[in-house]
Length: 179
Length: 239
Image (cartoon, rainbow over all chains, first blue to last red; front, side, top):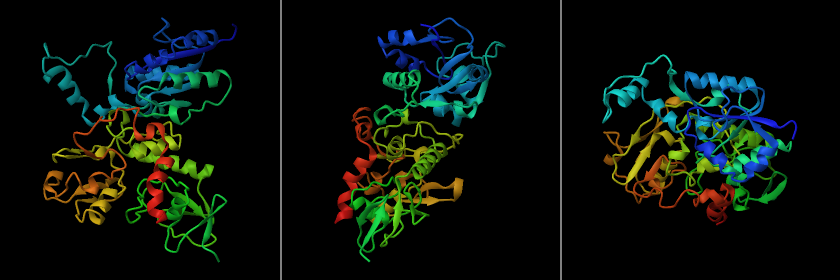
């Protein structure tokens, strides 16, 4: 089919749970594959998003690489979607926001129980951590939000089929969950 | 003039002394609210029940019902305002629903669902707030307090105690307890007190009861807050 919509997906400070929930659309993914093709995504091997119609982003922003990826998605996706609790309000990773970053690193890499060869990782290839985890809408313009931890497969299906069929996406009461 | 007013064009009766909220609830009209509870003196602070009375913005829970009032409640404009108010309540505290044991039973969350609130819109505050787990049966998680004062009123008006109060102003406003140590364990709060069970969010919780009802089978998982609220509150007003 010509003119398939291009979808890119990524997980920033997330757990890939939203991606797993997306895959819970089960065999409907075959129908979806007739209508869309995947650009940058964990289910392809494409490294950079380019000229996409829809970008689905799971997770908040916790480090410098997250910021770069998020901006790349914004630049290359006509419609950018914050998927799941972490993308919308930082979620569980943002619960570190109440502890100074140095204390977090010390606990994880120096003082924690069972730590061997204690040292704070500082390789030049590692992205620098932000002092706090922030939601996506504080960094770039977000067009749609799919709440949930994770959003159910029905949420993904309803949202994508609404968009594909040219409707304004609507999540009815039973599809809106913050948990 | 007869004792009637209109809400969204529908004529409803009221009795002298009723507020607009009481008259609406008695006739089965839901006006979203969080700090209002029919058992306690209205507080008028959450502003979710904001309505237009003869073109003027008022809180339905505190404004007296009067003959001939033209009240607007379920309009696009007021619903948008209520959504913004709810979003502000979310960003001002730390409301991480997936890790909160009140999820599914939480009125703040249920109002957000009812208003089809999908995001927080505003930048998040991530304020530093404490948890008071000192009491052996009751927990205070200040991260989730929305300062509705229902615990304050329940303690004073139903329990005959004075366990809770709100201290400070503006962004420094916070819930305090009546003990020199500042700890809940040093107050005379009992787990059977009304005040321990009145919190609309997960700020005051009874210990050892979490997750007895699984997520997915909870109060607002299958019913909207307008139905639940009217079922719970219509009778006391109608009496």
